[in-house]
Amino acid sequence: MEPSEILKDALESARHTAILIADTEGRVLLLNRGATNLFGYTAEEARGQPLQNLTFSKEDQSAHLFDGILDVLRTKGWTGGRFLRRNKDGKRLVTISNFCSLRSPDGTCKGILEIAQEMPPDLLNLERELKLSKNFMLNILESSIDAIVTTDIKGKITYVNRAFRELVGQPGHQIIGTHISAYYKDGIAQARRIMKKLRESGRIRDYEFDMQVGDRIIPIRTSDTLLYGDHGEIVGTMGVFHDITDQKKLMEELSITQAELIQAVKMKALGDLVAGVAHEINNPLMASDTFLHLLEEETRDDPTLQKRVSLLKRCNQRIKNIVKKLKAFASRTEVAFTPMDVNEAVASVLEMTRQQALNLCVDVTCHLKEGLPQVLGDKNQIEQVLLNLISNACDAMEKSDRKVLTVTTDCDPKARQVRISVKDTGAGITEDQIEQIFNPFFTTKSTDKGMGLGLSICYKIIEAHRGKIEVKSALNQGSEFTVVLPYYAGSCKVGEPDEGGGPDAP
Image (tube, rainbow, N blue to C red; front, side):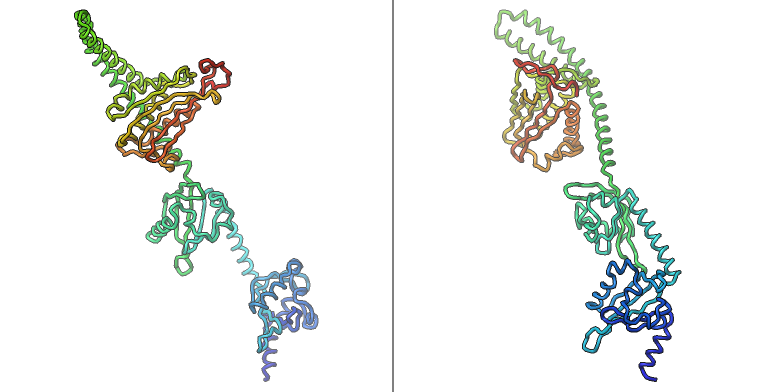
């Protein structure tokens, strides 16, 4: 039997496989019985007709699908896949087709060969079920309130859900293919730490780290797992990211509240202690005053002794005043906003901190502007703020060669604001630290000098007074903290009429 006859018999025997040959323009030259069974056209009906007009759907013809196949065949030589087709009666069917170019010995394309089979109904149904399952899983992933991300074994992102896209504020096409470390604050080092933990145990639960998207730092709690292939090999990772920004904020607020509660208890205990100490001090002071009164009578004729007795009496009075102010400051009183003079608050705090300044050899300079408008505030709280700022200034100058503390009060009639400035010649603060100094638990001091809550509490107090705290500082050039408070409505600068418009309450 001739080879051509063998080939012809083989083509005709393939009754369940469609074999078609077309020229380079896609016009049918030959088709076997399997192609007739599949598409319904006889060899005579199909010969010379464009293959796309006979077997491709109207939609694919409009989309020039077959032209795309021809382009691929001219360059690559073969292509294949699943295609939606139609037969002579217009019935739609799905085929699994392979196309290849027929070439002469010199490599010239002489025609096109298609080998096609109809996709079995059970396989088609299985594909539909798989597609439905895939869509169902995708819907679940897309609906998750937590961000979900998968990566390949090299750490490049292969999938992200809607929550992840919203978290980083980028569309999916910009994220896919990016290395996951691009979204970690610690970059590749963090990615390696996570991968090390995954390789050790296969999964991670409730691991916390920081993401960074642009200038935003996002605290994350994640649960991760390894993804495995059909043969048990590691093919990637999946992570579920939960944004814990709100939880962190609540925990910080809770910590601040607890610290304030502890401080309140301490202040109450201090108040009780001061009251007891004041009682103990007042008894010998009374005796001292009595003897000084007698000495004053007995030394009327001696000016030198009279001067010494007068000095002792002033010292006694100063002790009484200090004890009185300590009792007033440490006592637990209800917050009450009343019109107040900030100069009185400054003077009171300076008297309480005078000894601290003397112990540290700090020169205190005070410039209090007379006739300042009143502010509406709680005197005890304003004194607490000033006490903290002055104490911080003294601590900052502990190692300075030149120690000068300057406290100034002034006002801005145009902005209707009173300003209290506390300036030191201490170590100063860096730009990065200035951005964080009002954050709870941030401190530049050693742990034995504070928890880092003082300035955050001061910030809250001044904010409640509808004011603000401004900071100017540079490393090794000292710092200046300025408390800005609005005028009390009805208050005006001496010599100026009240224009109204100030806040009635903080």
